[in-house]
Length: 231
Image (cartoon, rainbow, N blue to C red; front, side, top):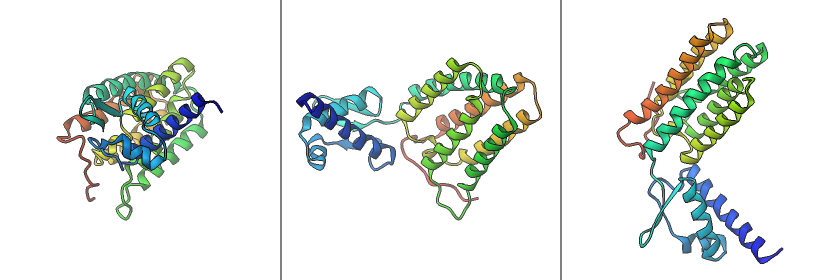
């Protein structure tokens, strides 16, 4: 392995190590990332760690200021809103286009996915926003990936990834939105199962997305997670 390949390998290892800790909330918004400490933890020089920080900064997960250092990025409401609005338009159109292509098996799988989402909200279980988000994305993917326009599907996949890079789970900040989201999934599936007009499906899907964004924007402190409220 060449020196360049070793450097890239270490940089990617540092990148994955930091990103994982941002996503599992060990490194919370505003957390200071000390290059020397991270390098010592990973048994490497600060050079690959600095490269990793630059990559994370480009993805919007980290901010870096000269003479201040690197910190885990706070939630940028403007960027997040733009991505959510874009996803709302594209996914609503894709699900409407997919309506006639969705099979009984697709809808059964979607129902099962939504039941698993509902199961995460049981009072005896501690709410896990990351697990909810993973299941939520699986639910949505079952529907929009049946869209015959594969370019549209690719764009939606990319926008989901962009949202994930900005923040692991919006439900960390507005967990109360999770229950309403599951109920809206039921409403959408009811429309698809009875063959509702495509404009009604598209409107419902867009309203569903808008509700999640509005919940975030209405939250006073988007970078301070709150607990799951009691039933």
